[in-house]
Structure formats: C-alpha cells, structure tokens
Amino acid sequence: MKSTRLRICAAKRRYPTQEQAQAAVEQATIILRPYRCDRCGQFHLTSRTKGKRIARPAG
Ligand SMILES: [Zn+2]
Image 1 (tube, rainbow, N blue to C red):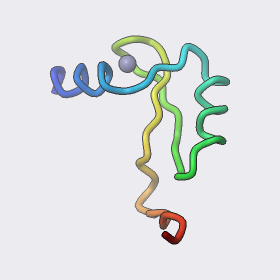
Image 2 (image 1 turned 90 degrees about the vertical axis):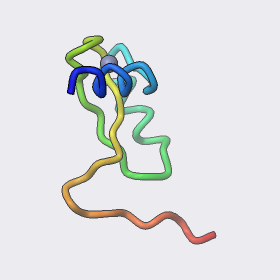
Image 3 (image 1 turned 180 degrees about the horizontal axis):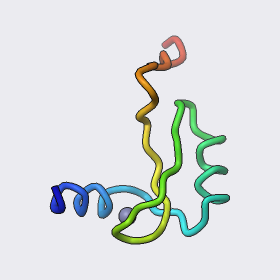
C-alpha cells in the first residue's frame, strides 16, 4: 500500500500545521477532516467521515 499512499500524498494539498488544515476545513463546503501524513509529516484533508455522508448543497 506504500505506493497508493505516496500517490495520495503527492496529489493532495499539504498543510504544514494542523491550524492551517483546520482553517481549510472550515472554508470547505463539505465535511473534511485533517490528518497527519506519515510520509510527508504534514497535514492533508480527507473527506472520509465515520460512515455518515453529508449531502452536498442543493444544486
Ligand atoms: Zn503527505
């Protein structure tokens, strides 16, 4: 699974601090969650929530 992670890491936006990641979460229109990446040591956002999908705004 290393290569998958590496690709995700490369494709995703990175945030050097959790504060910056959290700020991006709050600006997003969907539910995101910051997590620390063990490849780059920075933070990425994931849209995965615990089984609960949040509907997009109408339209
Ligand atoms: Zn990463």
